[in-house]
Image (cartoon, rainbow, N blue to C red; front, side, top):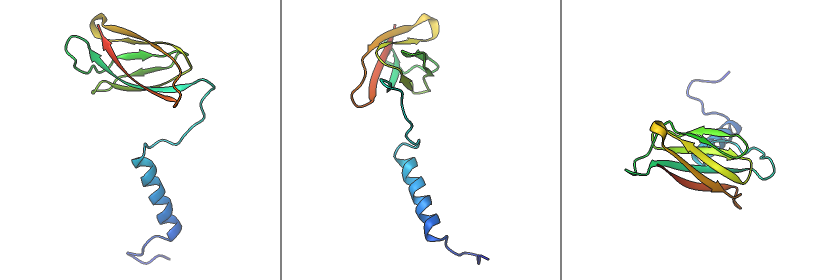
Length: 113
């Protein structure tokens, strides 16, 4: 029986420390990707004002989709080369051709017109 105020056992502390480190370094565990797949992270801006746009639908090659957050940010896994298409309010849109990234992550800025 544990006594009140007792410190956790060493393995429990180590596990808790590893979990905190994982969250601080990006949070999600690695998962396997399909051959040719890579991550696209980006920001969606209104071209006329330079302001970030929230709620924009982004579609990547292979059918993956994402929606931009309040800061215009999004993340999406794509299947390979092809067009990244963003569609926003009022008919604003942008298309950006993608090539696979060597580091498995690509950063883009989409200017919707």
